Image 1 (cartoon, one colour):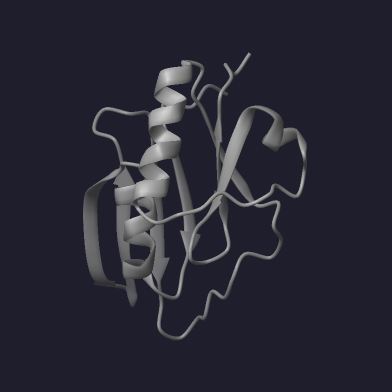
Image 2: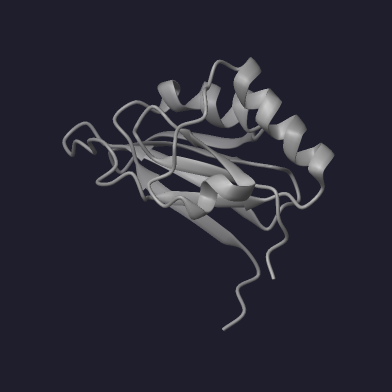
Length: 129
């Protein structure tokens, strides 16, 4: 199987609380929003033309809670040192401080940031080989 695109979908209890992290910090754009679609509200975030995007959904009758562990990760590979540093600096300017990774591997060449729901994003200064 060779997917042409990937959607990373997960529930949240507060969509608006996630937007500063993913938009201001990671630099993603709102690609679409919906309200009361079979009881769900949601937002899609990504970069126009990218082969991936995030979808966050909320349902008032189904609390999502926080991430089950500190090792729930999405990893962005940024092999160019300048691009990587710019991404890390953007996260800091948006008010997000790196956190130590549960797995120390990610701290060697990357920085980990935790969203308001406790899910983590690693900005890895390496190529994905």
